[in-house]
Image (cartoon, rainbow, N blue to C red; front, side, top):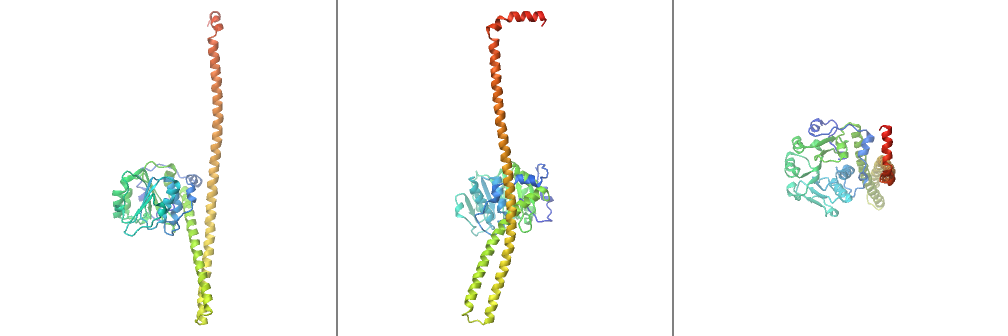
Length: 386
């Protein structure tokens, strides 16, 4: 999900891109121009939930998307990978938008819940037919995480699409695995703008669809950057780097825990080896096995720590760039404000001078001396011939 996108390299995306009926003509952006579209503090939020699933690497992108769309109501279909839904709930809570969040699981098993979101989040098993959303509530963000087959697409077209608002956005996970006819049914000819982003192999792809016509400029700009464009590559790098950094951090923690457990097992084995009734050879073999396991884990941990350091450095570079751009924009705004104040003062001064001159002119024209000397002025003009 870390990128509005889809399809592994080699996927034929031309037919899908051809479905967009009202695509605005936008030029390719440079990496620096694209970075002006992406800056958001939401990219660097710390996730509250630590689930390790296929959606974990999408969390920074989901934070960014929630900040960009700012939905009043969101619906996610499919909760097998709950970290994505929890990220959207966390964003809704942090942005203080009063967002209503609805999650529906395709099946009878109880979906995961978080009591801290109970005031604005509702999750239900049993599919779309079991979910009750108030009729007067338009949906601004629709996330389809479930495998999109013909049956599910028909339910979405019948129960959900008519409820989408004029600024609605659809996010489809793994669209390359969707049944083509089902994808056609969802997109149809009414889609305002679509695009595909090819994700890296270790992160699932996703498709970002601008369903409604009232979309913020940065979202419209993002979806018009096609795979291979410089702007697309820049956005893909930002989202994937942050997503992989998050995954690396979680994997590092998990490996540290595993290493601690292995060390405990080794210590227990060594402590038990003295009084144990095993033969010396068996004890040595057990200890050697555990020692090798610890060595392998330490090597894996060292590798993960090195990768984690690289991710942190990438994130630090992005953070510094974001803060530099924000400072520059603030300084430009301050300069423009100061210039506006100076111009306003000059305008007021000129207005006062104009009022004074007008008053002086009126006073002169209405004076007794001006009226008494009028015959003389008329005589002079007559003598001079004008």
